[in-house]
Structures are given as C-alpha cells and as structure tokens.
Length: 252
Image (tube, rainbow, N blue to C red):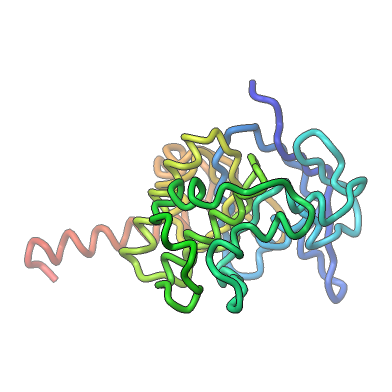
C-alpha cells in the first residue's frame, strides 16, 4: 500500500457552535486523486484548507507529506503544497511569468517559467502577458503552473474549474488529470460536480454535516455500492444523461 500523503486525525472545526468538520479521521495515499463532494455547507473546503493551514482545527491534527502541519511555518508549508482555487487570484499588476515565479519572491528557489507554461499547455510567450489579456481557462492554467512552481507534489484544488464554461472546464480537467499522472502528484479536489468527480478521481469521498459518509471508487459509486448519500449525488448526472439520450432519440 502507498504511503499516506495526508492524514487527518479526529479533526474538528466549529463555527457558531456548529461542527463544520466533525471528528474526521482519514488517510489519503500518495499518488491518489481524491475528489471531495457533497452539498453546500457539508464542510468540504474547510477540511481541504486544514491541510495548508488556511483553516486551523479546533481539535485533532493534520499531517502532510510525513509531517504535522501545525509544527511547520505556515508560509513554508504553503510553498511546498500547491493550492488552486476557483477565483485563480492572479496578481493583476504582475505579468504571467511574475505571477508564476511569485514563490521566488517569497523565499523559494529558481522557477523555470517556460517549462511550467509548457506543462499546462501554454506557449512560452504567454509569460510576458498580463492576466487581463487571458481567457478564464488560460488564467486557471497559469494558476496551476503557479501552484507547481515550488516543486509541489501535493495539490489542493478548491472548485478550480467551477467558474469556467463547460467546454473549457472539461478540457482543463482532462489536462490536469494527465498532468497529475505524468508528475505522480497527489491531488485532493473539492467539487460540486459529481460527473467531474467520477471522471477525474481514483477515489471519491462524500461529506455531509461535517463527516465523511461515503468513501469509494468511481466504479463503486456508479454501481450503487457507496450508500444513500452517494447514490443521491450519482443520480443527478445519471438522470441528465438519460434525458439527453431521450432527446437524441426524439422522445423529449
């Protein structure tokens, strides 16, 4: 069995007297692509952000890449863990190259910007462009390149493709999955799109009320072997596919 890249030990986070994350214990193996799904407010993003200390647990602890994250300097921890989120967060006054190499300014080593741009499918001359000159999909590719710039092998992704149009979202998801396999990354992806989770991940975790209520492979999810909460989520893309098939047959 692969060594665990992330370990959650009884982690709990409370807000307003409510447990947003409730005593979660979980291991994620190195090299896994794990999707974390569930309804809004289930605790997905909060659990994800505990890994790079954007959220501190009220109880329990988290280990990443063999070390307790609470024992590390937070900026240094974030330089070795890639983080990609929906709004990208590129600095508008910096060029693409400067955005990717921001880790160097923060104390990291040298960054090969052309190589990183090539990894995410962008030409080297994009390094001279400003973020406003890029499409949403191109900006998110730059966000992925920036997350990898510090040599990260652990990637946290919080709804990274959620603001993109369906075609771009599908293309970028496929591009990232190929990159995950090529580089041997460990990825933890939060998404509201169950189809995206099933198509990209090797393991799907379902959260409800701050707890992990299902943990299965995509095949097990589709076969209905992951419990009622998972079945309810899988039913959405399945019903959509059935309606589209009816329309294609002229029955809708």
